[in-house]
Length: 259
Ligand code: MG
Image (cartoon, rainbow, N blue to C red; front, side, top):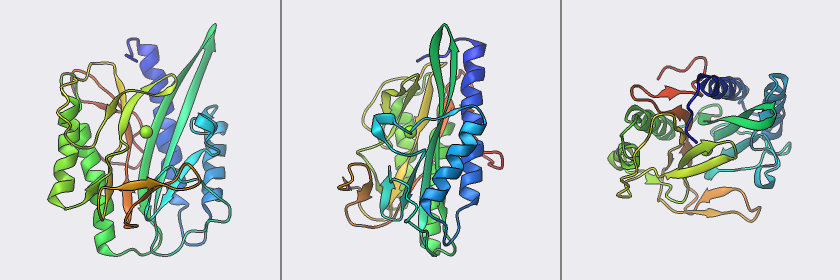
């Protein structure tokens, strides 16, 4: 969708701000011994207490508020009260907050955002994977303005992966955000030759996924969890962005995040 009115922009900002706040608060609970189910319950309560709706819950029958993906899991892991975090794990938390407006007809405004954090102590090489993936998200955001091509975004991200010899997940990527959540365009985290240009008023999610090993991923038997084929760890960061003629607006910037 193309956002045209100030009211629509405010509604997207409201959804995005909450998503950023919930992600930050949830990530602060990450510690050795907590279960991913507890993180999910916390995030759901915080979203609902703010009068919004967990975007993912029920989306294509996904059963939870957050996606939690640990170590070799890339994206879309399902939280569980029995899955307890261990020292040395890395965990990606991905969530969406929907601000629903109903006056006459229903309209949903969505903020979609993710980060990856360490549980306890992790080795410096793994920390660098996290840092570089976040850096690539910022590099993608930086080039994100009206007139830029999708390849400008993908290229900025790809360059950082290549420099550091990371695998880039190719089967998943960023996307437009509209009232039904995902919409066109798909935004790949590498160059595809795309000449599709960003327009002012587009809301898009940029979400690089880098692997310590190869590019390849596969779907687990639960039908949701995506893992690296070589079982090497993966990192994932995401923000929702409003494209303008000038600087992009990072809708899901977290309260303590400096971009
Ligand atoms: Mg997304």
